[in-house]
Image 1 (cartoon, rainbow, N blue to C red):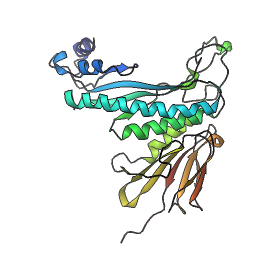
Image 2 (cartoon, helix red, strand yellow):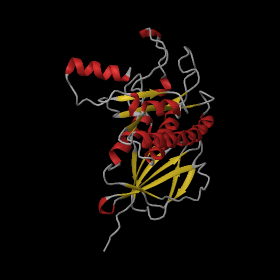
Image 3 (cartoon, rainbow, N blue to C red):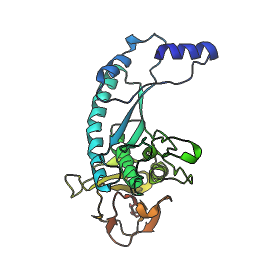
Length: 289
């Protein structure tokens, strides 16, 4: 079907420059699919394998208990091992093919059930924290794109005669159009990362198990240094970051609501992160002589 679609488009448009994405797999550990699709001998000689895509959704046990959402992060850890195996297959069979994990998120229980209870506001922060964590962990494997699946989802809207459409997957507030914490976290990462020049460096933390926080430091041009810190717990977590005094911190947390990251100048090396908070710390400039 993949070959036939491309051949049909070329036949009707004479466009041989268009790029294509194949697979879009939603299941897991389906490695035979990758082995088949990425094997060029299974396609016509002139069919490109430009890009593959697959998905990841963490699943919660509770729709309303924020404590339960601490389990989302370990699910992502498991998924990263699957990504490693897919990458081994891709590099062996079709190393020129790029990858987009174009649906990354959370689906809460009973999401498409009419009358399901509304999740609390802090859910958006938990889902945003998972996305930031996914971006940081998956980027280490040089995956090209880590994306979301839909801009607007919504619960049952009787006045509009609409049935639920995965409200927990939304990026925007379905009533006002304002960005959720997921939206603002994505925007913060896009605006912070210098994709061509920033380099992730080995980042050590006293939280050896990684159960409480995740941190990843980056260095860039002209001495630029910044650190992504994610609170993976439904609890306040204190972080001690030597050398950050005088730097800037942009933080997305429950208090920022449907607004952008709050920015503060750091006057102490100790930072308190509220539950599921995401912080980008821009370290102060260092004179290099």
